[in-house]
Amino acid sequence: MEDKSEITETEPEPSSSPDDLGRSYGTLLEQQPWDVDVLEKPPEVAASTPPAETPASPPAPLRIIEAILFVGGPPLTASRAAEIIRGLSPAQFQDIIDTLNRDYRRQARPYTIVTQGQGHVLTLRPRHRGVIDKLYGGIREARLSTAALDVLSLVAYRQPATKQEIDSLRGAESGGLLRQLVRRGLIMVAHRGEAGSREISYGTTPRFLDLFGLRNLEDLPRTQDLQQI
Image (tube, rainbow, N blue to C red; front, side, top):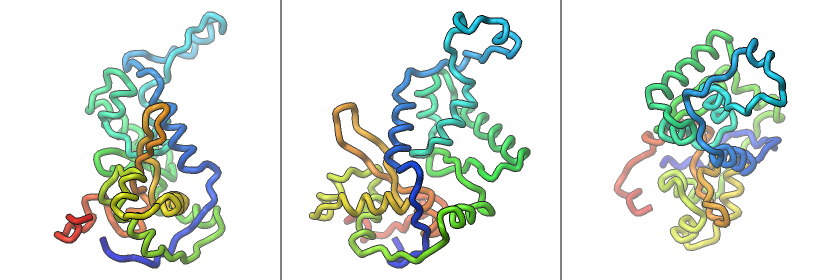
């Protein structure tokens, strides 16, 4: 991977940490799968039903997908969506993505859904990304140490990678560097272990791709030297 030891970036203090977003996503995924064929009641039917007798019904599949994309986390794939919404086919999933993007364009929304790897993420349109800089106090230069770049490279090529794997490959403690990279929005929590397990896997973010001029992870340099990473 090209050595970019000095990068220009913002370092915001987000209202919700990546760990918080990961927990929110994890909580959502731990819920029971929803059925695709369950439809929301029309307004007139809902109005005629006493609140005490109205059974809890899941939201429409389109809104479920939109909510997951809004929460963030790893790119949402068709297979992951099918685990959450029982009976959702890959074609239906893609139709939902296309429908949401058409709605966003028609409504002139500042965000869109883009493909990242095998899945999709919700992100700001390029012309609106400057809002982040204005909101969080402008841009400053920040230099990543050689050790931080080493950890970032290992996460990029090994993702999803655990702290234990990174520590083993580096032969050194990496917890502080991983937290620093999460704070700067270059990596995120990609997966959490089962209940009772503290194992966390990390992956890169869309911000990482933007800063290093990559369209997707397939654009990462592939050389013989990297086979030893």
